[in-house]
Image (tube, rainbow, N blue to C red):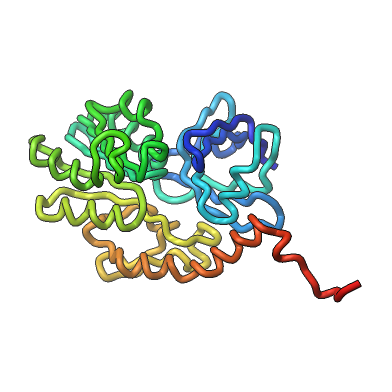
Length: 285
């Protein structure tokens, strides 16, 4: 069992957890993820490793409550324990050196982007960040990102904080006004990463995206995280999760990720309203 040692709330549906995982902590690198199972009957969900503390034997996760399992995880508190935490999985992020880089995070994708941004800065790069959310409440880790970048720009879809508009609007302006941008790292919703890749393509800027495909085991056995990259089939869990954004078939991946949308809504409905789904197989009394 993996004990939750600390929990704090970053936004109404975004919580940060510090979990005891002494065998994972020393091996964690930027870009790695874990597969987590809440209890014996729970599904396996992939979550990015945001940070680790080797001395304490802990890992840090930031979770947005979207589906049934992540909503259930948000109900847990310090002192509770998780059934399984397996990792680190996936390939670590290739860290450039001595270049000018822009890191773009959308929503909870900023949590996944933070350790990469920090590693890029520590490797001697000039690093800019653009972080966005639908509203001010969904902009997370702004202070942390500012601490590891030359400058950080904030956007919100509704204009409630920072620049009103999309992260891609700020990205284009930053590329046009900053000489020598050689790479962009983007993590967030699939449509956002597709849009970022479309912005950078005409400039020929290398663009790295982290794909949040459907995963079951995280080891390449189930095939659920298949993605088309440069016309070839890849598995996000073992070949990624990061790929060249200019080579990813985003439309196919978006369509595949919607394949279980109905089942996911039904599962969330049963979790949030269990009284409406009582088993009646025993008949009336």
